Amino acid sequence: MNRQKHPPAKRSMLNNVSLFTDDDDPSVKSDQLLISKISLPSEQPRRYFDVKKMDQLCQSIKKHGILENLIVRPSPKRADRYELIAGERRYRAAKKVGLKEVPVKILTIDDEQALQIALVENLQREDLNPVEETESILQLLSIHLDKPIPETVSLLHRMLDEVKGKVPHNVMGNNVVEAVEELFTGLGRMGWKSFVVNRLPLLKLPSEILEALRGGKLAYTKAIAISRVKDEQARSNVLHESIEKNLSLSEIKAIINGLKSSANKKVPKTVQKFYDRVSIVTTRLKKSQAWTDKNKRKQAELLLKELESLAE
Image (tube, rainbow, N blue to C red; front, side, top):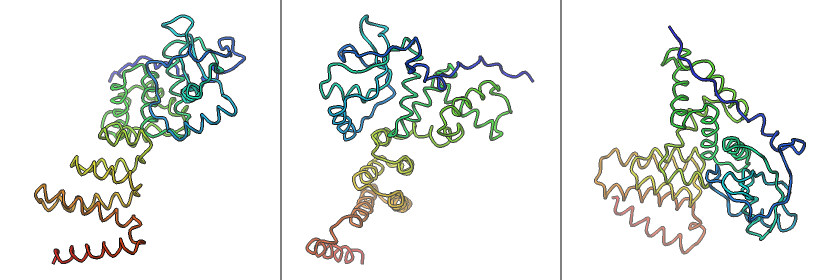
């Protein structure tokens, strides 16, 4: 049987990022630049900035200045202008506190190299959320394999099918498998199998849940659990309640189990919504401080007796 041939993957820059930030490298220049000459690129890996942490950074810059250089390159579109590659938080904070100049390292690199460095820097953040991490790794793989993202996702799934014996062995070609393994080894975060099984499904989550994950409002284990609620309104209710009350995973699962139990009874939609409200309010009461307030507790006891009477 003839093996399918694949072009060799592009050489990864993961192990060479330091070359572009080394002061001894002749292609790197350190300087002070007017912040007005720096602009953001059209494609930025980072989308969410924690407001509290941004304020803390602003205070630090006011007191100590910028301690780590921004990384820029000459703008490919405008002369005497520069495009930011890495350090967007520092750039935004510097503008916010009114700095006129910022310390930079100027690299002479192309679009693809600039994007790779930006993606790697994004992956090195301490506050990186799982959605941004997944998207950044996927973009790096796309560049590394020289394939569009949809093709890269399909390739990863086919690799997993090969491991599971669902497709013939070596159908992918050894060079492709090695290229994928090389990138994940260089990142040192997780194996490619774990990425396919546990991280790629995050990108298919309902948009509301995906945005909560991006904003750091929800752990991804909770997001996966909530995403399994099929009814859109009920799912939205559970999501907002989970964020507002910071419910634990076990509390979220208890609510979801209550919703499933009600759904199995095939009750009318209006009654189902009532069941959902009862389940959510019960969970809220358990977590609230109402029980420590004598007046509120008496009021709740009266309402509870009325509900018990109705139930009988």
